[in-house]
Image (cartoon, rainbow, N blue to C red; front, side, top):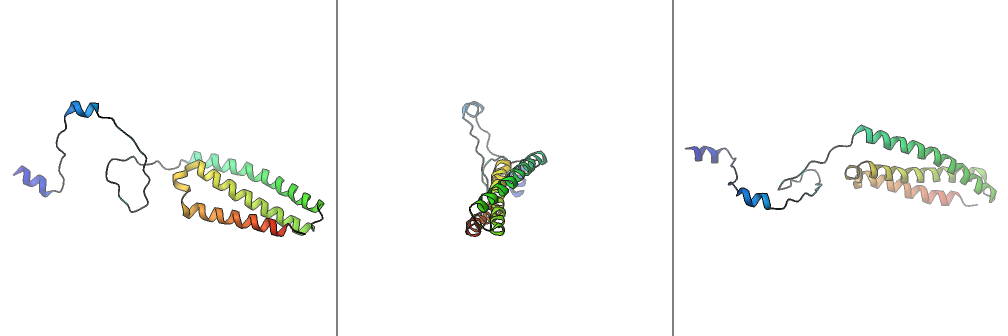
Length: 144
């Protein structure tokens, strides 16, 4: 009677293992990240979510980098003006440099904060596309 109740519930306990062989068996740990909807057969550890402290530190680093990139933008625009590029084209090229550097820094900071969460094609793809477009536009608009 007890066996039929156990089998009908859909849950069964594994057979008891020898305690001595289980103590000597090596244990391995691997981190597996699966796409949503797929199931992993076996034991696994859930990857923790990004803490707000990590995001705050990453945002602070990005803010400092953006200020530095702004000064680099002005220096690049002034260099182009010295090379006889019209000021409006030099300014546009400087802003495209800023966008390129900002997207590059954003991708790096996101990868450092939580690469498992932020290095997916859905997130890093648009960041990389904006960076490449800004790089091309920087060179095109920086011409005489």
